[in-house]
Picture (spheres, helix red, strand yellow):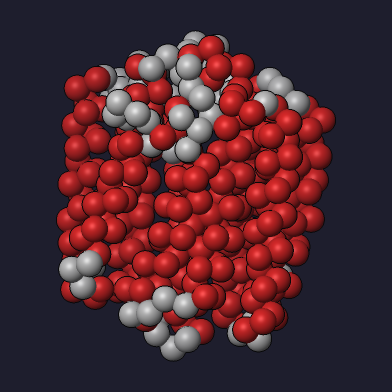
Length: 294
């Protein structure tokens, strides 16, 4: 692959992760639509901001994991652009800066729709993009990656997208945010389960490294199952579609979990990673459709 080519940058920003980024925005938009508060332009801006922050976080992760020794030549997961030498250090730093500035610019336009309090939210999102794997105390290296994902891929994007669209925050918003965050964290859990030996050797103290492989197996199951059970609570608000449709997600999720347990270790777990990405996208579609049905 040619150095600093378009293919290299596509590998670095990881388009396969965009489903996890867009799902919370789409779910929040469906909630706003069902409540009569949807507006397409701020919703689109929220999606663009989220995608730019995701690209920033992925590039920072690509660079810092290599520098910290977490992305070794024996890496079991998908290739990383910087570790493979497809992007130079100078270009990577410029790329991180460009995506950060672009994300901040889009975020500033959202102040028109939500108010100056969104400055703090935007700043927190930018900090998360960096501090997840960068800085003197990276969250992902101290067992806090899962908490960060649940917050910044669930509660924060769902909650504040709805807030921008409807100027409100309800229990249903919190419920949807937690459910999305838990489902999206299954991606991180299967990654950490696969990489537990490599992570331990490099000093990356994920929750699986700290508490053992059993936490990875059952933690994955608990995340997807709890998210599905949380959706059942939508029935309390008369949203039966949102309560019942995610049960279809759980069926596929269960079979992926069984496969993950059976494979247990090695590169073959990338099959479960792919299925997990498919499952969380399905979850987002089912929850969105359920919310639109009312």
